[in-house]
Image 1 (cartoon, rainbow, N blue to C red):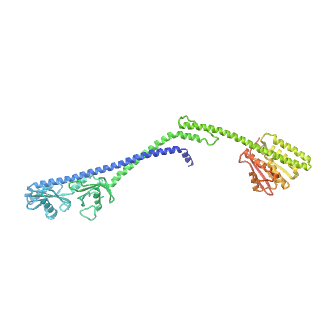
Image 2: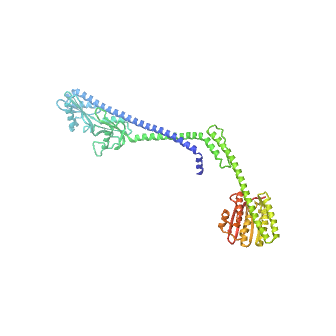
Length: 577
């Protein structure tokens, strides 16, 4: 996971550019395809509307043709005087022949001057005697030369909804009962199936003609003749006010279009299944979604290619610059381009070269500073040691021990020669211990046998190199602040080599000190008596010299206990001759 985050961080510019271009191109594509989808949906709906308008127009034409056929038939019948002169079964057979020649006529009636009514289905007429026939004859008698239409009514003569039309020419009156099932058959042929339905009603009346084959139209339960549910009536009221495809909450399963553009003024409502329209929309949506997916995949590839093309040089430059992890690895980059990246790499290389120069200058300055500090600390130890040694010699002289004082001065001369005449900054443990022995003898001359000295230097550690005058200040501190105040004691120095590290222990059984005093001495916070003002200088200087020479991880550790003694521990990386 961290590796992925790091790669994303290194490719942040490329990723941002890729995302920006992808969002922009994807957004343009989405807007374009979305508009195209909406346009196609509108076109599809317009096609449906256009198809329904065409079918409605055909249905109205069928109604008009239906009216014209009835009109022509009635006019022709009233002009045939022979039909009115025949009586009895002769009239029945003549009317039946005319009815059979006109398939849409259910029953034909004529009324002569004598008022007698003859029918093509005489026996059925004599049994039923529908009142509407007499009403239509009376209307024709009162309005000669004009067609009279009844409302579509349920007729017992035809066992279905029929339209009665009457006409008078002279004294001859003819009435036709035309079944609406003829129109239903014609309308079904116009619709062509696919769940499309229709309803027809007289103005503000109940639907009398509808698609019986469609199980989607809800009928009133327990009603005969069949009637559609009341909720469908709202479609007529709403559909007449809109020239577009409409839908209402009461009938969610259909979209519809209504018109009353025919000679009879009948309202015709054409119903289109909403699930088919929704299917068209869903199909178009998924078609657009597939194309959008293909386009988007193509855009991703193209945008990725352009992004890589224009950001590869930048990412290569960034990878080269990443090689510069610290001031120890200042790497130049090489580009032969003449564009912005070329100028950037050129300026970067100039900066790298200048940094190299500054790093070298800083290193030289730090090295010189370290040398000056080390020399200053080393020079501090000389006066400190000389002060204490001369004080020891003066004490011997005051005690009248001239010979012993002379021996002490000779030992001092050897120490001074060791201190000031050798140019080397490091010596072997053996050499350091030889000179430390001279110093201890001087102190033994001063304090007598109260100071006992012991050394345990392993053979492997004897040739290891350490800083010159590393042990003497620490032994001096043990003698003056541990052994002497306690009235005498032992000083023991041990050295051993383990795994390339030299371990040195300076132990005394003097008065000891507290843990806080140990830490204060190392931190330079311990305040000694005025007469001992130089006594803590040795430990501080040795500690700082070791850190400067060997590194911060090396130095002095002190462990002490009151009344038991003190152990000073030094850990030094191996240096052999």
